[in-house]
Length: 219
Image (cartoon, rainbow, N blue to C red; front, side, top):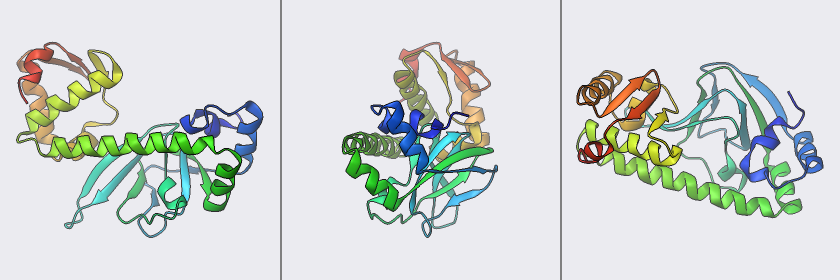
């Protein structure tokens, strides 16, 4: 593993030089976590967490204690920046979906970093906007009347994001079901229905859109 692996794969650091990436690496803490490990809760999030390898789910708990998946972090993504600005985490949890490698940056070190590289703030604002957009889209999905409509919308959105009629699901069906507010059994049934209608072709976590017009008509 290269010494500055976390810094170099994070978009907010992409404009920095090799020397600057090494400086950032020197002030980050590296650690390995195991599948199922709880990484932070609303009570103890006080650092920037960068994912170097593996995957992590970010979620909330509803009043009945049931998980509501918000997103799954992939290598190069980060969480916890709000806490570093003094904004309290009131609802987010993070758990490793598989054995993963993290880099963490304390509030003090993060603020020093922003003072030295103010351009990072601009990239952080762009990341905030992206996360807000994702949450707004998820709310729209939840307001859809049927699971089939939610699923069709989600697949078409992935097609736009990935710029392809063949898309890769970013997480397993269990997590996708939670994200869409349904059960794995119902989700599997709706995927089979779309395949039976010749609207999609599914192989593992890869979905090929066969008829986007009819898929849009499901809305």
